[in-house]
Image 1 (cartoon, one colour):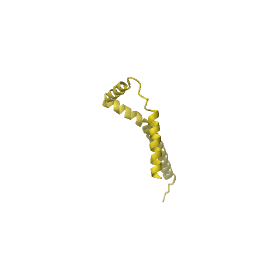
Image 2 (cartoon, helix red, strand yellow; image 1 turned 60 degrees about the vertical axis):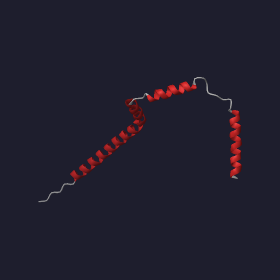
Image 3 (cartoon, helix red, strand yellow; image 1 turned 120 degrees about the vertical axis):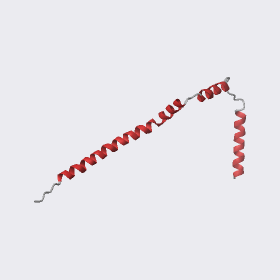
Image 4 (cartoon, helix red, strand yellow; image 1 turned 45 degrees about the vertical axis):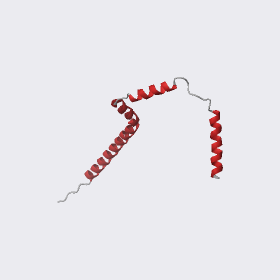
Length: 93
């Protein structure tokens, strides 16, 4: 079974290789690739940090929104706890 699958795969790959043998990249492809590689190597530390910050921005916004929600919820809970303690006042004579 495995041998049959391997042979079928080899035949398919051979056919694909024959059909695509004439395909070649357009002229100047290597030059464009090398220019892109050189341009990407020229990125400084600040540019790299800005790229990373842009990728991190949605996470930071979500964290900030959750922190504000948590702070509001905690503030309300604290207000309710303090208010209920003021309601119960007992005096003894």
